[in-house]
Length: 230
Image (cartoon, rainbow, N blue to C red; front, side, top):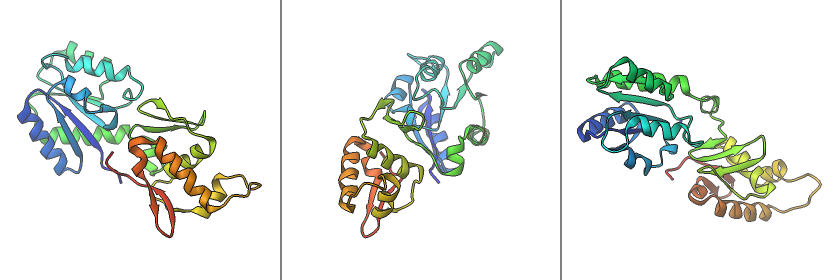
């Protein structure tokens, strides 16, 4: 199962390090940022959850949350606010922005870890639950209109390339032989060779940019979509 990635944003470096250490010990992958501006440089759309301080120099946590919730690639990412502000109005503002939880400092690391687990549990998508996603990082397929995009930008795929990507992504980790790909992607009344699969996979990889490495060739077997650091 893919490890959940958490972005910790707080201007207290020591607190970031403590949270990062303990969340990694709990089985999560973490990155840290000491400002909202730095967080935006770390591709927040590639994380499963944000731990976000409210009061930071420069852009506040509230403003960062507002930007993320207004942006299509990041609007779905759950946010837990970490803050010393415990006034009712502040809490209500956080939830109004779409926060999934609100933890007031000082807090125990065990409490934060428990809340992270709870939020990820209730916001887990059906695709994550059954291991059959049409989204991986910022690579996504829209089945309704038969398109794909990376970072919200459309990928110019042919119909065949789209069907190959959809099949491999929806069955992540499963190896398909060239013959299986021919039978499931190409029309039955079209005569093509297994070499045609290799050519189309090569073209697809070129269009996937940093996700190209996720399509893996298994010598003597075929192709699969594998999870990789991208």
